[in-house]
Length: 106
Image 1 (tube, rainbow, N blue to C red):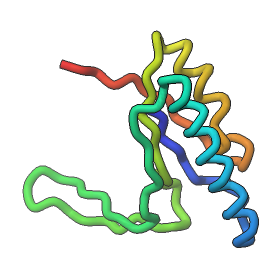
Image 2: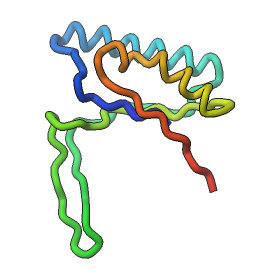
Image 3: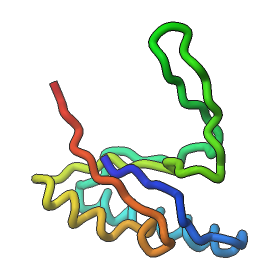
Image 4: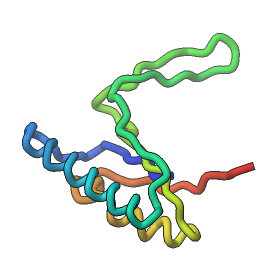
């Protein structure tokens, strides 16, 4: 799973945002054509974090805080291939980060 963190993301104008979306769509298309894309979506900027076992506390996710703005689930032969595929993610060119995590299937 690739988790796209938005901290540091430098997309200021609507034109920059539109161009970036086109890059993500193209990159996802390349992954799909090569048989690597399983799923992926942009996440809404608002949400909540819950913590505590009894009567959980709800904390709003701030748009200004480090947040996960989207994800991709990819199929890769191994972790090294997943890292290699993640290096092509447009998130990196815009100053964001990509977290690469194996999914444990039981």
